[in-house]
Length: 416
Length: 107
Image (tube, rainbow over all chains, first blue to last red; front, side):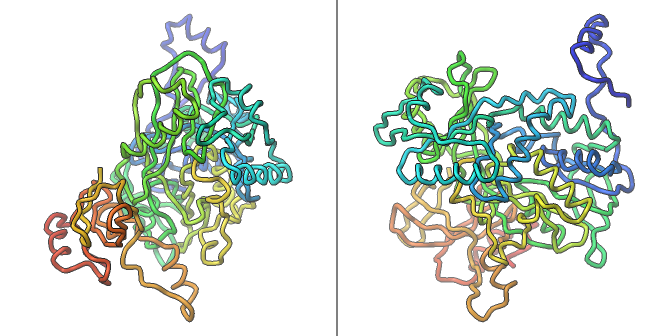
């Protein structure tokens, strides 16, 4: 299919033509018998992996298989926050790579992903947190990630609606990343899908993987609800269901699936033009372009695949945020939803080879995958095309056995 | 809301009263074991979509640990039993098999 470039001129041209000339953004082909690479999971990470396989390595005989609909999993369920203020070097490298790719993503994909580097604050509300974040600032400065520690007065200037006086947890300062922000999460998936489709890749939706076929310890193909598909390399990028797919291939991952939930309020006039994360009281909030306050909270403590949350977590999150932002106390909650996230022991992802030759995993992003999408795809594509990637090297699934954790559960608190 | 009956004190406790403790019946490996065994015990988890056996603690009740059989796809609870066991009780397994004929059984 032919693709027209999106531009202001194109909008004007189509307006003259009653907007009848727009073609579909991506195709929906039937699966072929064989591909060089099959990526399972057409969310942000899967599509980005496929995109960079094509763009950076010229591998375009690729299918991206999706059980549900494009970007219908965690890509469409997150709170769209983008930041790279991580403590450990490998994390800072991959998240900063991702953040920098977000800066130019709309131009690269010719698709407006509405990246908004509006600035991001992580509040320090206890002495321990202050020390922890100052340490992160020093680490970030060495890593080349632009963050700074700011005073409570500066926090109040940036976020006039905040209550810095407590009573229980006064704001003692904040870790500020001026180029952090948000993007339109669906558009990221749609933009990548369109770009993949343009390169001749097949995005196949409503196609569930039912089995993984291996011969002599090497992957040869997959069975799906739309028939068998052969492949030389298989990428599993199915956050939430990584263990289920790994089980089909006959190995186990250091992952547990938990439910994470978020909610949005009714839309209100612009009142907060930065992202605020309060990890001690456990809530984070930003305002969407539609005016809704987008609020994220914590995960349930137990294994769960139900994509719904528990009421007491909402109560906990909202209670914390009402203390920090008193003016939101009378806002109505518009909707609430849950997504299933992969949790690893050290709260860092896996971008890794697996015990089965030809199978690669990109998973375990826990509660913070959206911000990493382009960097994760970049590293996964390099790993799949070349067999190794400097960005992914430390994120091997074998790091647990070797004791080489990338311990972000301490560095990042809980919220992502 | 998830409700589990504590086999130690008999209270039907909701999830705010309980603390999840992860996969049950892990075989512990320590000094003298291979790296693979220790890695498996320490980090690899079953994480099934369906029938799962877990450790729970009645944290804001009697404070005791117990075990529960639960479906992670529907949140249905099949039953709870004391922690002093190395495999799920046979009658509980039979009950699960009755409700979930496709369940492969405890491995």
